Structures are given as structure tokens and as C-alpha cells.
Image (cartoon, rainbow, N blue to C red; front, side, top):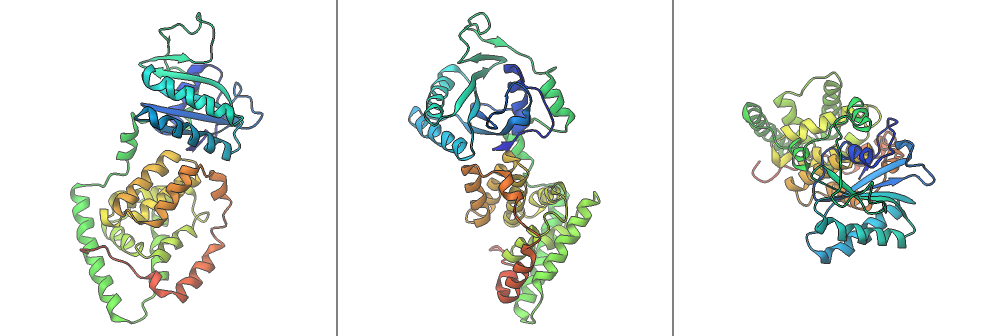
Length: 360
């Protein structure tokens, strides 16, 4: 799920809605159904100011799964107070039409009005609600989004539409080459130092040291600098401690969201894969907070690939599945959590110590 664009864009024709979807999702959808949810009473023919969010699902693999998808989509929209929605299905008619029909019926039962329902395939679109064959011929309406004002406005605002979801996922793929070799060597050294301190029993202050590492990394990121391999290694080791990871959340607001996203994206890619779950989960949280549902989803998948039992990633996945709004997270007092987490760190020092993955 993702929020709408924060710039004013006029959407009046079917091609306008088709043009804006890839920029809202971050990629061009294929074999998908997309629902665009509008504010109660908002005029969908004026601007995206009334557009609250969009949500995308893969088309069901079998017809037996279609009712469940329709029910889940209706529940998600209802939970978020949606009264009107625009539906766009991507793919051939035999695959899209039964899904659109089921979703429209379920939305109607839930009291949600379908503004329009389109099918998009191979450079043409079809409307399921238009009764006029002159404007909606059987072979579809050809369209071109290359010069569409809505797409141009999205590009001007800095939004990017990648070719497909795989391209979005590739943004978080582990780096390779010389940097990978350097980070791996530095991570082994950081783990050796951590084991020595863990066995020394000298009361090492893992929490405040970890917080210092996070703050220094955010400062460097804010200044437009990349972390060194050693900094990546040291920070990734310290983030294996739950309370140190939680300390990173207390800095939300102290640094802008874009700085956090850049840092956790960099660390997700450059950290050794066994250490990727904490930064990927933090990235997913920031993406969810800023309304970037697609990025949040692929970051969650990256975290759970590294550690299938990583609880924060599992919670964020549940939030995405339930359609938790960005506004809910933005209302949290992250700075106010700092004293509480610091007190917990003092009371439960085990939660501040690194938990090194097996083999490290």
C-alpha cells in the first residue's frame, strides 16, 4: 500500500489514472489488480488531493483464490474508511475480468462505490463500466502515457517508475565486488572484538556506544557521505542487539526521513547478508512511515530472507497486510521513547549486547 503523491496532479481521464499508478507503486505492475482509494466526498476528477492511497495485489493463481482476494481487499479499504475506489486490472481478459467482477461485487456489498474499473494490457485499456461502444470499443482504447501530464508531474516531483517489481527488489540486493570483500573482512574483525568484550565481563556500555555509532552514521549520511567498510561492519554488528536497534527509532524526527532511508538502504545492501535483518527492518519501518508501501514490502522480504524469525519485520509485514496508514506511525512520539529505551537498556543489559549470527 502506498499513499498518493503529495503534489497536485489532475486526474480526469482513464489514461491519467493509468499513467500515475506506476509512480505511486514505484514500478510498472504486471498481472496485478490495483485499487486507488479516495477521501470521503473527494472529487476524483479534480486532483489527487482526494487520493488517500493505492494498494496492489498479484492476480490470483487459481479461480478458487479470487473470493479471498476480493474479501481481503474490501476489508482493507473498509478499515481505512474508503467510500470510493478506482480499480485497474493488468493482464489478459480471461485473467483480469473474473477478479474485477468479484472485487466490484464485494466492494458494493461493503458500501464502497467503484468509480471506474479498467483492464490494461498491451498498450490498450478497457472500461468495465462504460456502456458506450463508441468510446470503449471491443478491441480496447490505445493509449500513450509518454506525454501524459500526470506522468510528467510525477517525474518532475522526483518519482520513479521501475520496469517491474523485480527491479524494485534489486535496489536492496547485496552489493558485491571489492566493497563486499572489504565489508566481510571488517565484519569478521568486528565480531572478534565483540566476542572478546562479551567474554570479558567488564560491563561494556554497548547501548550508548551503539547509539553513538548510529548517530555518527546518520551525520555522515546527512552530509552526503557513504560509510566506510569498517563503519558498515561495526554498525551492523551492534544492530544485532534489539535495544540498540530500537535506539535508532528514537532518532526519527531528529534526522529527516530521507536521511534515515538512505542510511538503512545503504546498510541493507552493504552489510553482510547474515546481518541484514535489522537495517532492512528499520528501512521497512521508515518506508511504511513515509507511505512508500512497495519499498516497505521489499525491505520486509529482505529482512525475512536474512532471518525468517525476525519479529520486527514480521510485525511490519502484518501492518502492511492490514493497511496500517502512514499517519498512524507519524503520530508516534519517537523522541519520547528515548528515555524509556535507555532505562530498559540499563535494567536489561542483555538486550544491548550483540547477538552474532551462527558462524561469525
